[in-house]
Amino acid sequence: MIQFTLPRPQKAVWIVFLMLIALITIGVIRVNSFNNPPVHPESSRVLVIANRNSPVSLRVAQYYMQRRGIPTTNFLTLELFDSSQQPVFESIEYPIYQKQVERPLREFLNRRHLSDQIRYVVLTKGVPLRVKNVPPIHL
Image (cartoon, rainbow, N blue to C red; front, side):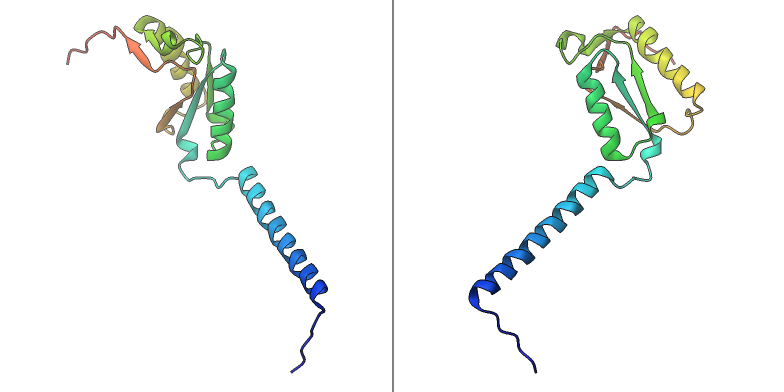
């Protein structure tokens, strides 16, 4: 059996060198996994809606889509008041909802042939959360 013995200072240098290699490798793996997130099988069934008038909404949508592997074809921007700046805009009147949200959403889904594919809709910060004064539905 052959044994190599290194003087103490040289042994410490090797240990530090190997630790640096390990840290660099771990860093590369982490950076790579952030830039190339795993694509979830359901990601093509998600539609992300952002407010075109809200920089926050657009940034959140971009980040979310990148991290979740959602295709850019499943991204809709709407022209709305920015509820991320004014909480009063978190609610929207029903006629305005129909004109600024429902109609453009329906047209988008039909134009891109996504009506049967989309199962989940994600609203980003800056998009209204509530619809006010919705007429009752009579069945």
